[in-house]
Amino acid sequence: MKITVNVWRQKNADAKGEMVGYHLDDVSEDMSFLEMLDVLNEQLTLAGEEPVAFDHDCREGICGSCGVVINGIAHGPEVTTTCQLHMRSFKDGDVIDIEPWRAGAFPIVKDLVVDRGAFDRIIQSGGYISVNTGSAPEANNLPVPKEDADHAFAAATCIGCGACVAACPNGSAMLFTAAKVTHLGLLPQGQPERESRVASMVAQHDAEGFGSCTNIGECTAACPKGIPLDVISRLNRDLLGALAAGQA
Ligand code: SF4
Ligand code: FES
Image 1 (tube, helix red, strand yellow):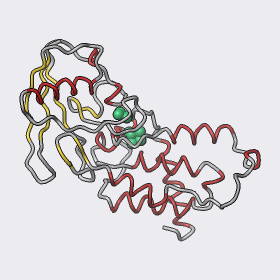
Image 2 (image 1 turned 90 degrees about the horizontal axis):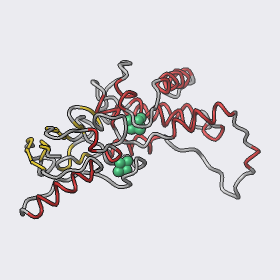
Image 3 (image 1 turned 180 degrees about the vertical axis):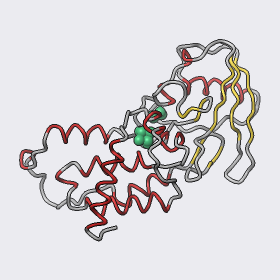
Image 4 (image 1 turned 45 degrees about the vertical axis):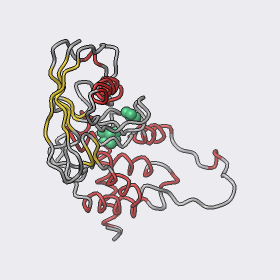
């Protein structure tokens, strides 16, 4: 395929960015989107130009580092991670716009790379459990109902990619925060900090500059892991509980 990519180029956090167009003459439909960017970077390097900076690590949909906005959609035209998107989703002659996540709480570092440290700080504020030292307890001492285990596991599949924030008109990270609150709040090990956790994580979410949730649902539609909106309802119930207990 011959394609044109318009890529956001920005030298550093303070520089003014712009979209720059590049032509690629030999793109295979079997390439992943990131492999197509590798080809672009090889082309730029051979021409003595600066390659495009983009984040990636696992390239198999589990680390959450690779997100970009493709033709205005977080992670592009399929509901998957950018690394799992393939060029067969595009056709010969296509013009593809590639931009970094657009959210005030995710400042641009360079080109397509944004700083998602705000997510780390939300986790640090409450995404943990207290663990007593000593040997590991007998697993059967902590029975977990199957339904709770399944819901906790589903919430734990959030990979922290940030597509929910990029897709949300409010720039809210409530789906991410709620997935973490739900994951721990459903398990017996998560009960001691259940109220302080939700209060701290929501306070940190707001302090980072993420917007409020108004139940639009773009987050869950863009989420490559299918985190459902009901985790936000669960977060709100837990937050009310924390308020009633004087924890928030
Ligand atoms: S909730 Fe979904 S879209 Fe948001 S960070 Fe987690 S995996 Fe990514
Ligand atoms: S590179 Fe790890 S999820 Fe895409």
